[in-house]
Image 1 (cartoon, rainbow, N blue to C red):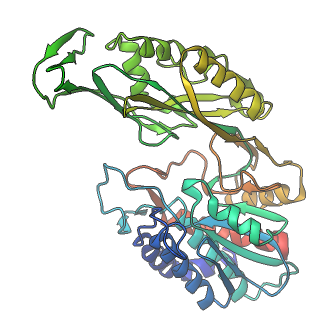
Image 2: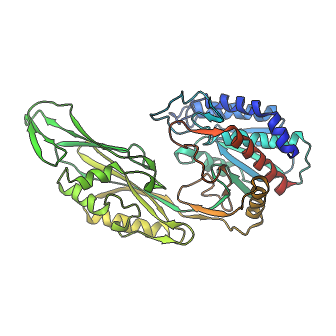
Image 3: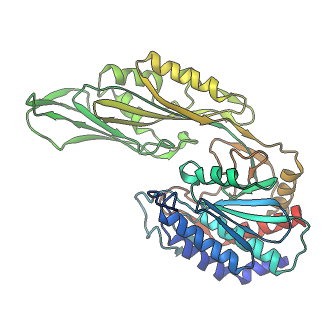
Length: 446
């Protein structure tokens, strides 16, 4: 066992206590206030972490509650470890209080345990280990903590506008061994006039496969009637206000891996329950079970990043309009303009208006760079497993940082239930992440 691993073992309970304190802060994005760009709780989590870094002897800076940093030594920083302290909303289905770190065997369960508070604690103790063990460094190391990764990374944009990033950046906001390629992303919002006597409610976030689709009949008091829709597609009039609704159930999944879910919206469209032009058009564009957008004229793939994904993830009626949202992850050999032209053109041909279409280009860092090869060597040395670079459909915290990669925190074939109920990190993986990051600091900066 290395000195670094022994150090971390001896500080295991402190690591768990620090994670418990951070998990207890419900750092979901809130309403902006003066000096609190993402609400009070993300700022509270940032303050707590910076206080821990200061107590460790690091030089800390709070950049106006957008993000914060901790310099491990006095040399100009050349390596940054970038993690975030904000979390996604709780959702339903938890078997323990989400903002109370709960031990379940070796598992530490709580919102943010694996994404990204656990890895942030691991980064802190990795740096502490190197410092407290007196391991000499020739380059500067900086820890950076953000507060808005889950809602667009406006924190990082602000930080980069006002501070210079070190030339080498990795984030424990993905998986091992090294993520050096990330598909491009496009999010399309569309709408059309809705004059039918039904309300539709499906999907709450654009980057997730919807798990339910609710269809509710609308009673029009001016006309004195409405129309009820049955599961077989038949209709019948209603003459009074009704609370009944049909609910189509599916299975949620991240939009970058839609094959793991069962899209309730496309399931509803395929059922033929609502035989109106708008639903027929959407059913042609988004057949149930298709996840690559082939029917929209997409369906691209490449050897490095694989098949693209295209998910109709939101469909809701409001104020006389039908609103929809689409999440697209496209391969490294395509560009944003090409994909947007195709999908927006198909939607317009089908009679829909484009409300917005925004995204980012693919991200790729050279796997043969000294930086990436150093990380792979560390991974192999600590784990004993073969290191390799991978490309993913999800976007990590370094998607728009040139030369940046994701390095952890999930290990191959492990699922910490990120963004899901009962999210967790194991005690062993908390320690192993810290060990890998400490060894990376020594490898790159020693």
